Image 1: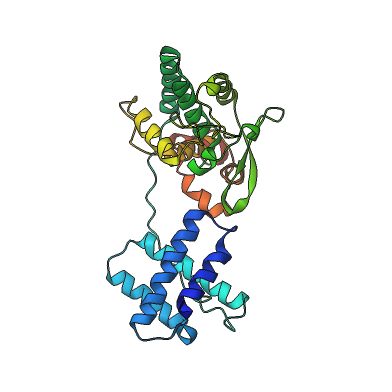
Image 2: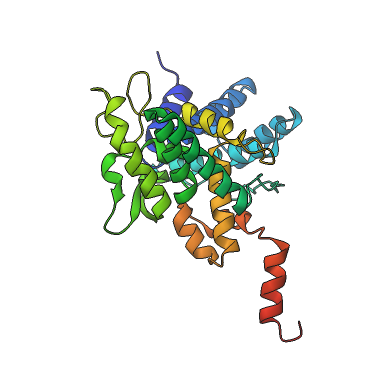
Length: 302
């Protein structure tokens, strides 16, 4: 027989589906499951024990375990979602998370590529594809071009369909976080790479391929994010000076290069699909040379 806490956790998880990514749903479920287990371990009934004070006690115990700040912040976000759901659904008269403060995060800047390195990497991949002239090589070149060219998350790239490219408007239509679609401009190099891949896609396609833009070489089904991550790491070995990073590093590089080129923060927010401009601000570490140029141009006493 399902316990009250288990039933509560299951219903909370169901409420998240459709509004959050699968990874977030899974993480929040695990976090709240750990919180409810904490209550049980303290002999507290989940029917009356879900309070701000018990949440703080749980988080304090997690800090004592030495968990990273990022993990503690995710716990806080999960409890906020949980508290909001409890109040909205009438299970509690008030949201117990309203006065739960965030932890101060020390966010290191992600490693990235310079514009010259990005250009060299993508040119090298085209050269490799031309030399090998295989469907996989042309696919890999297109994947890197689209990841960098449109600044996509790896999940967004893997979710692209053949119909996602709007050539009339020269955009790629992306299904992003929170089931939100956005249109992202895409340049000629990425479009050319896609066209070259589509010319040979049929050699890898199977009945499993259906409408997927990028497919695996063994079964022909929609490409797996792990394959894309491995591809990015392997491709970066072509550059001696490049840091070892995954697909998100290319997204970061694209955002940084847009800002270096003069794009405003709000435009970059739209391209990346961030719900808050605060999330985009991590990409504002533009080069000192550009800051100096802007200062010299704009300041009356420069």
